[in-house]
Image (tube, rainbow, N blue to C red):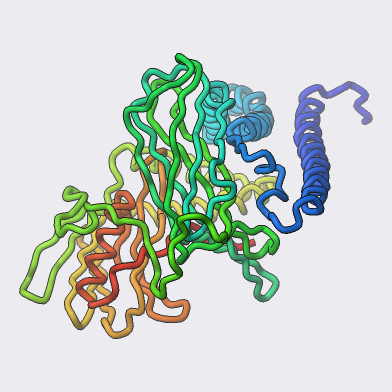
Length: 468
């Protein structure tokens, strides 16, 4: 029989998908149009300033850099709207599943509205930050900054910010290198150099109309590289990040700044060895910067044992546990649906199942500890999860370098992993979940001293590797 009645639930369901994919298509079209317009502007600037690449980008053409917080807030709202639209059918059909079919397993799908709420919260925070600091500007006094010289600027914060007692400024040089092999590509992001300054007792000017924070960094010649995006497979960017904890929306702004090779005034001589910024005093002493999570004891005159707790803290662990429960519940619900013939869940299961498996594998690592014993001949790494122990020995003569990379982050907290590179692409994790970069640098220096390796050069930080 032909049913001529309009089925409103089905119409609403399909309308949501039309709106979602239509919005995605429209967004991609607008992005392509704006990218094309920006490319044309940069081409004009390249003709006007052929010998000054720092003037060939509309980001820096006037010597003033603006933060991207407003754009981040807009992207967060767009993603929140998209995720909310995906969650609407679940909210619409869930009451019927519970009351008519008594399908209480459907409660697992409430993970989607909950995630939508978290994304909306993040969008609100970014919007408050954009309203508070959106008019902030970075006035470049050295245009551009010089490798082997200095980078100087003024961070101008409009408005009265009475609770701002100190600002953490970090200048970072990052390289993104993409390699392709067998039809697959992998991108490695490496921090070549970074330095941090803390400014306190900040003074306003023009009454309370604005707050000016002086920015000054001395940039070494090595291992830094000039800003470059000419090769899409090998990009180098310089970023200045300003951070401070405030009531309401915290100060957390990033500026992409120009740094190039110049014969700048006050430039350093080109010495043969690598030049690094002054090391944090906590890294140079023998005492652990984080005694609650990293402890050590001398077994004899040549052997030292380090005990590293992998516990990230109760807050981080509970958040991770919540996400494991959400993703695990959604994966289980979709698996049951596929078994009973709901083949629509197969597409979503392909996305959720690998993430759930990875999170479950990471969970035991937060509950264990690592004992690292180092002498002149080898490194013994013993990982313990309750009664389970796994021992790995690394001959000292095979270790080429000791480096660290960021493993995880939550807000302003970061955890690091220390690796021993054995030559080529081989590397072995020595310690994980080291709290903070100072602790990671301290541990790297300790291991290098024990093995007789050089300790005067800051290691590059490999932050992420992905495949597509």
